[in-house]
Image 1 (cartoon, rainbow, N blue to C red):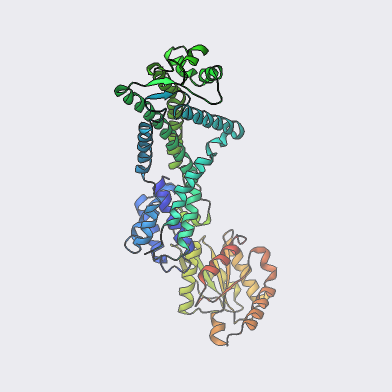
Image 2: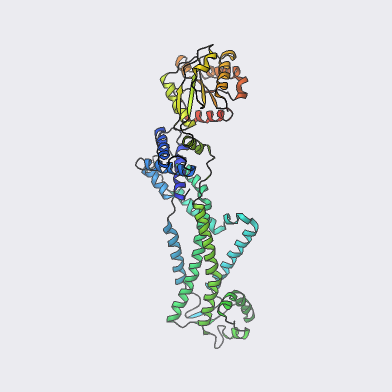
Length: 485
């Protein structure tokens, strides 16, 4: 999945997992997005293609409804011009640096040339040590500078204002947290690419500036130091300028020759042209070539990671989406026992099961099984391989010989499929005054009578289907279903 699709998918997931009341993004919206994506990609598409297509449809539907949120999402996308601007500024900075001496004199020991060489050699050493220590994980290791830049790029999203965002307040933190984790490795490779190319351009800018100014002015080369003598300077330059000496075929002046151009002596300097060529060749070998190689490697890694941001769909959120796409709509058989649900109960149950089994879940209501007629279940219940929902009323008195026998028959009928046991508290609330203590006693009685069925995964879920707490009920049901099959 590419970067844009991964971001849109993360944004839609943040909405659908945080907006528990489904006010900003309704059940109808979710179902429409899934159906539209399924029609667009056709049968047999990969999970990545379907999930990405669904996210695009969802964001397009949200765009006129909540433009503030869409602006936040768009603000998280990487802007290519940022990298281009950084590299242009790096070259310009190198071009403008001319303080390598005083006036028209070049101090061979002064920055930026030797400082730039030292810095890059230190960076290469750190990269080598990291590779030896971490092996394959070295590509994900970040130095202090990289961590700082990655933190700034990803952390800048946290400063986005929520002005004009209609989504619940918890959606944005969820989005920013998830996206920071998903995109961290991508941004690490991206920052490495930018830093390597910027370092190469900085060196190229320094070289260009030296030659451009050398055309208009005569630079004189020399050196000065408080602590180093001619012999120490000769050893230092022999090491730092070795690549340039090799590339140009030049020979470094001997100790006496270097002593002769020390500032303060006579003649004190010499024409800087040979030294400029030597410095430029050294920067080319030590900085420009390695940085370009490392930058290209980081760019290839960035490209690879940008197409593989989301590929693991084991999360239950994605599994529900994909189940509806690959297997079609889930068919659920609802079998009431000695209970005729009201219209509000049927509506609440439909909304709840849609959350648990997917937006396209289809409910089929079987004829209620009368008390003591458990044997008629085989002819009353609907056929099909889908999950079975055994529905009771809390008002009924639970008995192992009746409700227990009914549940065993449902378990047999379902085969390997899941069975969900729901006890509706709506009739109790409609008949009696609200008394939490009495309700809890009633629940305890149901649990006690059906305790021997727990090993079959038939543990009851208590809820008021006329006015269900959908988020809490969804979590409770999903926990029960883990052991139902």
